[in-house]
Amino acid sequence: MALADSGKAIGAVTRLLQDHLIRRGFEVSIGKPEDAANSDTTEKLNLYLYETSFDPQLRNFSLRDGEPPPLWLILKFLLTAFDNGESSDTAAAHDLLGRGMAALHELSFLRLDPLVALDVRLALENNPEPLKLSFDESSVDLQSKTMQGTDERYRLSVAFQVRPVMIVPGNLPRSALLVGVDYSTTPETIIGGEGVRIEVIPSMGARLDRVEPARFEAGALLTLYGEDLNASTLEALLGNVQLVIVERHVNRLVVTAEGSPGTPIASGATLSAGEMPLVVRRRLSPTRARSSNLLAARLLPTLTSAALVGGDLELQGLLLGNDTDDVMVLFYRESDGVTVHLFDVVTTAPDQQTLTIPGAAAAVPAGSYRVILRVNNQQAKASPIVVVP
Image 1 (cartoon, one colour):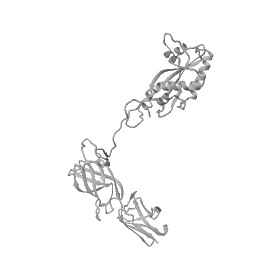
Image 2: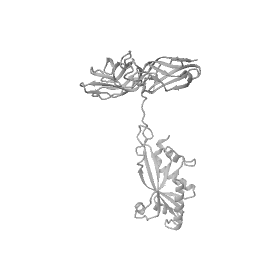
Image 3: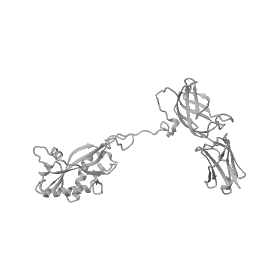
Image 4: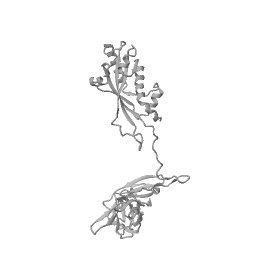
């Protein structure tokens, strides 16, 4: 796009209006009405650009993110008609003015068709929307102000405007290198989020950036990355369960989501699988604490086995869901990648270690299926196979 040519947009709009009127059989001059009256004795229309203003609706609109907005203008014209005696006050001049108004009204959107001159096209073709022409009130006060010279006389004219007219400064567009790419190597190395470093102002407390892994089962070792994470009074909580801290560093904290039988998470009595807040806090007193920001952590169900017992499907594992959880079990046919059936009526256990789907075998055709378990929209990693006879 030749955006630099948009610097000629004001003159291009005037020439575009003149061209469209000439195609409709009019003689058209450009300039002050008094100058047009003294030029010749031909019946004609005259275009006079009397004012430019900035479009308030587009003042801050940029063509590309991060770049300064261009200039968005409104061009205001007067259309004056002259008869073949150079008078603008005769009935013939009024007839011509009415026909000129009708032609402009037909041109409510100024199109850049193939007949438009090349220099006009280059100056206007990058406008994000077509140029719109609309009529303004042409009061006596307006016309008197535009025709107030000592050698000028009042001439009946019609006011109209064209918007938005874009002018782009001639500076080069802004750009930057890609984030997550190491340009110091040959060839460039994709370093991803691990290589991004953002300087921040030191805070008055701990701050969390991320947790790895973001999806984990009970018993997993978690690494919390952030700032000011080495205080001895720091606690880590998943939901409402305090986690065991294994290592403390300034920029990371290693904790374990307890998983041995009987511990708060694995017992199924405190948490269910799902997405929940992960936070660290520094104990200020027995009743007060200063917390970090929240991270979203995804605790997964653990599915260890699946078997058909008398036509019922029985699942075993950890955090398989309780009566208040959103639990769904799917039969997935591995041979063609089709989910054959969804079961959302299940029988849970208080410790969340067993799950029963009554009549599962009768709901699907005979075959071999993988069992997919989702609890509160979190899917278990394991998908054991069951064979329906």
